Image 1 (tube, rainbow, N blue to C red):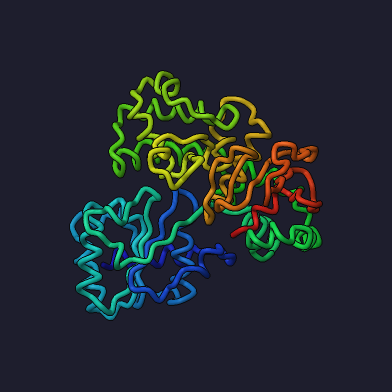
Image 2: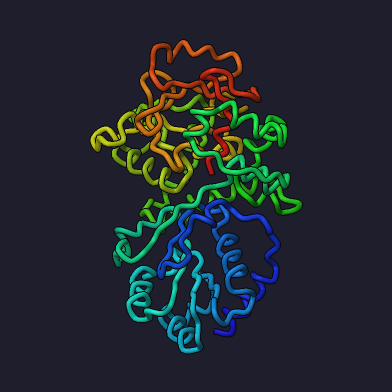
Length: 398
């Protein structure tokens, strides 16, 4: 265990990030078993280390951080670690990247049942299915999903501009007050375009890094390692999936033609539908349906976006269209905490209640004329006017 303690000390001593993600305050850290899931690169490890340092300090006695790809686990099990740690007086075991450890769910269940005084916090890929894992942890585990940085968080991490979260109801009901409060503190349009290109993944804070190349590396690791290991994707089809992502990122928001897509990717129809689902769970694409409550319709999405705008810029084979970028941003920010559906009039339906048309400054709203609870999310404006709300303001939801 001394090797893991040394790793713990190295990781905590290097941690130098005073700002925290909004998710930090939403997690019930008193729970005995906590799961934090998210796509590679969104900052799960940093969040975990920040919690350890603020709650337990740097010393590894009461709380121990362990990455499950450590060489220690070549000869020891998770149960071995929990047993020794508990006997030494340990209170909280923080396990990073559990998806890299075979049989993780069964052993975590055994730890939960066998050590009632020991808290366990674990992180893993967005592909982790806690309910259908080898051992069903759903009744024991409190699970949280972690998204990349919102525009609000980007302003905090990149520029040191601290502003509060603005709930969706406030944005829609009091958009002028909400936009005025932000504009009085900064010039949001100055930072919005840089965020859309290089602001979603917190590794932009690292020095001397080619950001978009790093995003491409993240995508390759998901395609080549996580999807085959966690979703059973045939490794021989990884090249086809990479080509499919390039196609999806290089056009307008993709209206789905499964047969044409299958032909392009040289895969059969059922495989394409399954792979789209896997890519969605891996947080590489965002699948939009016209009715999320109808299972039959959910077999084929109505529209496909890249999961975030940084992926769009990193993978597109041509210059990113501004309309695609706008809709991709909106879909990304709203789908995190709200139900987002494809609208027959307008672009999006939120929580089966509000209709949103996304566009530029000159968007006139003809598409949503006569629709109740309808708004325009407009790019390139600072202040809300009537039912026209600044697009960037939807980046303050978390």
